[in-house]
Length: 102
Image (cartoon, rainbow, N blue to C red; front, side, top):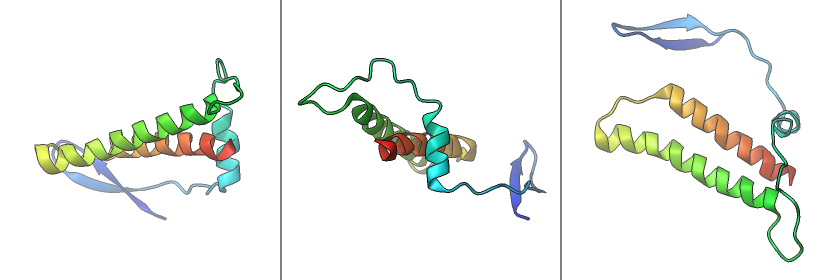
């Protein structure tokens, strides 16, 4: 069983992580698409499909936010926020799932 790092104000300790089921990409895409809003995403001939455009904008934006965490740690001297990195990586995965489903 893998160990997970747990941060506290005074020390860093490790705890056992619960076993997780590993999802296959198709299963992740299917589950991610359930949360997608399709409002105002109609196809207009001769244009980039709105759903595809939204996925690409979101993917680039979230990847930038992920990189921003590294920048803040490396150049601004802030603490590395692993929770934020994991959240941003999850957002990147979500937009990638929409893109792959298009």
